[in-house]
Length: 385
Image (cartoon, rainbow, N blue to C red; front, top):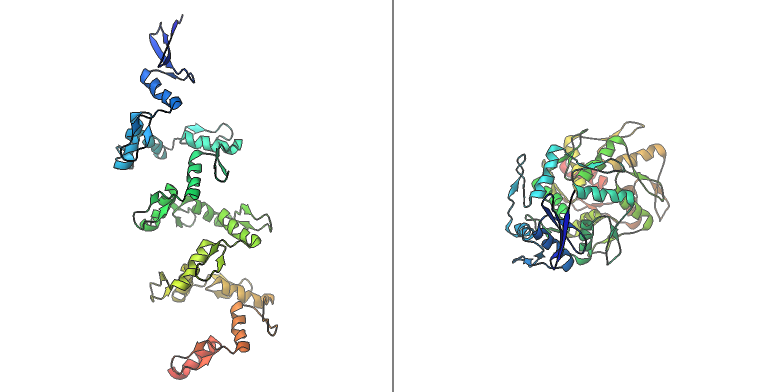
């Protein structure tokens, strides 16, 4: 028969199992039980708000000394716990334990709804919010809600402008540590996620997942306006701006607006004259990587775009599109002066020179000018013999 002695004091209550000689200390506020009195004292600071251990570097305060010791390793860079498989080091033993699940494949935390397993309890808790729909963490600025506290913390940096994670190579800063990790792979050249079909490698897993849909032909993201389907959410988001007319990225030089940030970045090189992509064969430089890729086909002879009617091949997709209009009879570009129609926009632009009298192609030998580039090339044969 168990006998318990219940004792109350200013420091809390505790009960003593006399038969076993086992003593437990219970919190007088929430009834949490602790085996040691010192653990009860630390626990009670949650209710009192007391944080007697302060960091002498950043003044952040903690309820217990061990938490302060762990925190100080952020400033000292100390990582005393090393993985015996890959030698990766950690500032806290619990982080090492979680990391080791990568090597063992252990996933001890199982969702009781869908049976999906996880290596960490915190990840399981976040996952379960998918089933419950619960989003308990709400931004007090814009009321956007999140399934976990860390996502809210990262989101809040949009409002505060805080970017605490800085690249030690180019000094670019980020609001999330994971963004910095991905960015650093640009400098290191690391591409840890490889496609098991074509071996193409990527710096982040989400890019690999989207890429693999090329092989499976899966297009899970559908536009609710026109029902066009896409392999990735980002592609759908960009597409939807066609319907909304949204152009959120504006050039500060000429005020031309774009639907995508990458398009603005490319455009700005017109103003800066930057041409960061160099051909390793002839050293010709380009402002866009896609222009370089197309140019390199002049050296390799590669023509990957083939007409399914006459099998003529082209080095650029746009050239194939224009060519296919020979077979379809489509002429979508109309001259607003004489109403003549053309297969390609560049052909229309050349035609417009007949109305404007513009002759933009000039011979660098005799300075004779022409309205069409091909006329200039033909003329230059006079000088070359």
